[in-house]
Length: 342
Image 1 (cartoon, helix red, strand yellow):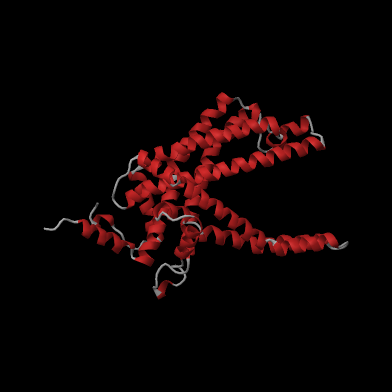
Image 2: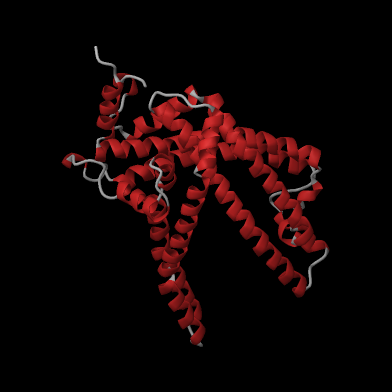
């Protein structure tokens, strides 16, 4: 194990959290790229499979240009919608699972780098597979909790919608009120849930606890302030710090996504798909040999960039443990215990 001095375990500012994540990313770029690509390629295959399945079973939802050429009958629309709902649910669940697995693998590899150790790509993937059941099971419990609490927050708006249906006058005003109430209750609820349970994957992988215990552990780490410094009562709030880290990494992701969209726009323009007239867009107008290389390049670019924000949340997790639980002192004690006597 590295010496305590080389580990530099101490409370970090938000800027230092991002800087540490970036340095880990750069110092282990090849390894993290391969780990990420191991999940991005299956994600790409599943995405293309969903697309081509949809072209056969719900084409009017994926090919808007068909609406002008051959408007579907109502029964066809219903059938396609049901296919879309079923396939979309399976696809969404698969994408969520792959997201969690790539987060887990990056966390395993990043944890070793953070502590001055090394782990191979094979070992990172193996550890992820070993904990896959616990991780995905915890995510399922988390999603059930999200649905329940978000649904609960929507009840006031649902009451206003019901009142609008029962009234014969002023329905538009009631519906507008329902939208306002929905925004007032739903947005804070969603943000609160995202921040409160943003460290669940790290807890599952690094502390090896699962399900409700992992949810409680994430909530415990995110509760209140990261330290007891009275001069930083607001800026030291755990959720506020997490939101800043996530906002910065989101900005990076948006910038990269914008860059990635340019080749897609150019190719679609070349084959007559104008995004300014979405009702005339037909994805099948672009041949596979023109779009697949661009999509594979997207997968590679995503594999190169995505570890940054995943690592940022891992460093944030360790920062909270250092501030709240003296994790740095634990590592120091373990290092001294393993140090041979003079």
